Image (cartoon, rainbow, N blue to C red; front, side):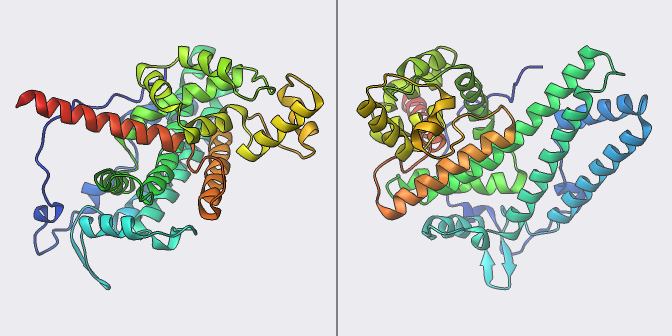
Length: 370
């Protein structure tokens, strides 16, 4: 099964209006049945095929999996009881509307952890997403080594649930990126509001068009970087980047051509490629130059830096997210302390580029219709 998360829908021209106009004075609550949607149609189909298949050979295990799916649906029902982020509500602190939430997200400038600033539904939904992720990962790992089922079916379902796990991981990652970009006051206000509204949609459904567009590209870049052997000498990674780009789609190639000339983007790209921080890259570059060494392998990085570093990582979704969070936290620290190096991650820069490209396309399409 290939990783096909779908494509973005065709852009249409629309007139900008105040989002408050969509909400009346009184809240019209939706029933739980209307709002609960823990699994996508694709996931429902996979589960409905998977559980009976396992039950034929391991009834006890299939019952355990069925119980976990049921628990996730109950958790989803509980999350759905909390007020929608896309509706007007009268709450203890006053009236809450989507537009007020958007403005609050934009105005909240704090380098610390923002968990207590987020809506309850966003935090609870995130917990549900993580529980789903672990469940899908377990389903994938179990059938992969279950020899009572024919190999072709094992491979199909293992890959299918692995991709669902990865897709969920990218939803977590995109949430982080939106929060980073929303708080960047160097960005156009229309972009920041767009990212904030996309964040509300993500929190409401934990499904996002940007995830569907960006996830396959970043997943392919991550997979490709592991197959390459970066030359830890010049530390430029130009040959590796060229090889990676040859395997990517037009959007990624366009990103490389137009954005890589910026220091922050090229530095973030090096961190992504080499798996170590900007500071470690600079230190290693100086050490190798002083010693007159042209290149070393990944397994030698720790020795030359004099500290243990994980320059390599597997294809596991947790490795990807862990490495991302390290780069994210380092970028935030540089911003706070006004230090040299990238102040955003590669993922930040890429999603920022995708947003800009989509906006330009939208404007060009609107101009062509005039």
